[in-house]
Amino acid sequence: MNVSVVLFTADLRLHDHPPLRAALDGSRHVVPLFVRDRGVTDTGFAVPNRMAFLVDCLGDLDAGLRARGGRLVVRYGDVVDEVCKVAAEADADEVHMSSDVSAYAHRREQRLRTALEADGRRLHVHDTVTTAVAPGALTPSGADHFSVFTPYFRRWSQEKLRRPLDAPRSVGVPDTVGSEPLPSRRALTDVSPGLARGGETDGRTQLTAWLNRRVGAYEDRQDDLAGDTTSRLSPHLHFGTLSPVEIVHRARRVGGPGADAFVRQLAWRDFHRQVLAARPDAATADYRGRDDRWRREPEARRDIEAWREGRTGYPVVDAAMRQLRHEGWMHNRGRLLTASFLAKTLYVDWRVGADHFLSLLVDGDLANNQLNWQWVAGTGTDTRPHRVLNPVLQARRYDPDGAYVRRWVPELAGVEGPAVHEPWKLRGPERAALDYPEPLIDLREGLDRFKRARDRG
Image: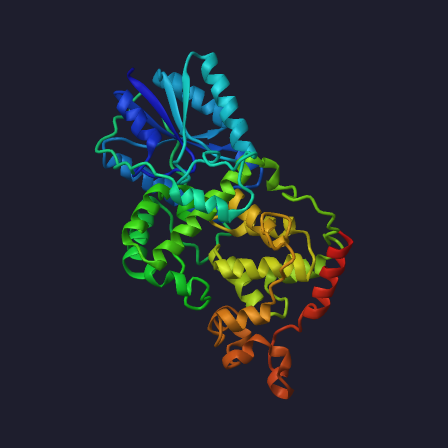
C-alpha cells in the first residue's frame, strides 16, 4: 500500500494521534486532510469564536506537518465528496479518521464508508482519540450506557488506558493533491476580543504550565471565580489539539488531590460523550421525560435578553455572562450559576440557554454543553433534579470579596466588599449613582414558580 488519507476532524494535533500513526505505519505516503465542512457551516455551528480558534489550530497543524516534511491539505465542501475526491487524486487505498458521538457525525461516517467502499477503498475509524475511554466501552448490567456519573467514574477509573503515541518524525505527502489556502483570522468578524489563541503548540505549553505549577491547588480552588484556577484547556480538548489519553496519563504522574480532581473532570467529559453516543436525541430533547411548561420567546423575551446581555440585576450572573461575551469562555462555576438562573429562577427552556452558549463558547462541545444544561435544568442525569442555585449565596461563597463581579461589571466597581453582590440593598445617593438594573425577579418568587411547575409535572 502506497498512500492513505487521514481525515482530521476534532483531533487537530500530531502528538498521540492513532489515525495518523496507523496511516504512516501502513503507507509510504499520507495525505493529512481537513475539510471545511459545509454541513457544519449550514447548521450554524461554525460561529466566529470557534472559527477563529479553528483557524489557529489549522495553521499550527500545517506548520507542524511542514516541519516534518509534509503539509496540511485543506478543502471546502461536503466532507464525503471532498474525501472521495482527495482519495482518488492520491490513488489512496484507505482513509483513517477518529470516531465521534453526535448524530451528525454518525451519519457522516456511514455516508463516507458507503461512498469509499463503492470506489473500492476502506474506511478505518479509531476510538480513544477524542476521549480517554471510548463511548460504549463501559456499560452497566442491562443498559447500553451509564446514566449516573458515580458508578461510571468508578468503572472509568479502573480502565487501563492505551499508551500515548509520540508525534511522527516525518510525514511524506504526495505532490499530486492540491489544497485551498489556509483560512485566515482576518476574514472573521464578531470574534470575542479576549478569545484565547488556538493550536497544539499553545495547548501543550498551557498543559505543561498547568500541571507543573497550578494543578495542586485545583481541588480546593476550582470554584474560585476570581482566582480563575481552572485549567482553561477545554477549547483544546474540543478541537483535539490535546489528547485526553495523554492528559490523564500526565496528570496521574503528577498525582495528588488536585490532579485527581482534575482527572475526575476529564471523566465527566467522557461520561457526557457516552450518554450522547447512546442517546443522540439528547442534543435537543429532554434526556429524562418531564412535563415542563418552559417559558420561551416571545413570552420570556425581556428576561432572556437581559440574561444574554448580563443585565439581570444579579451581579454574579451578569459578570459570568459578560465574561462569556468578552472571552468566548466562562468559568465552570459561572456556567452552573447562569444556567440555573435561566432554567429554574426564570423558568426558561434550557435549549434557549444552550443555544446562546453555543453561539459564543469557543469550547462549544455538543455533548458537554447540552448535557450540562440538561443536568442543571433537571431534565438530564442529575440525581437531584430539583436543586436550585441561589446566585447570592453562591456569590458569597465563590466570590466572597466581590473581585470577580467588579472585574466584569464595571458599574459596580466602586462598591466595596461583599455588598457588591446585593446592590439593591444600597440606599440613597450610593444606589442612585449606580447605572445598574434592579433584579429581574425576586429569588423567592422565582423559586415558588419553579416549585409550582415541578409539582404540576
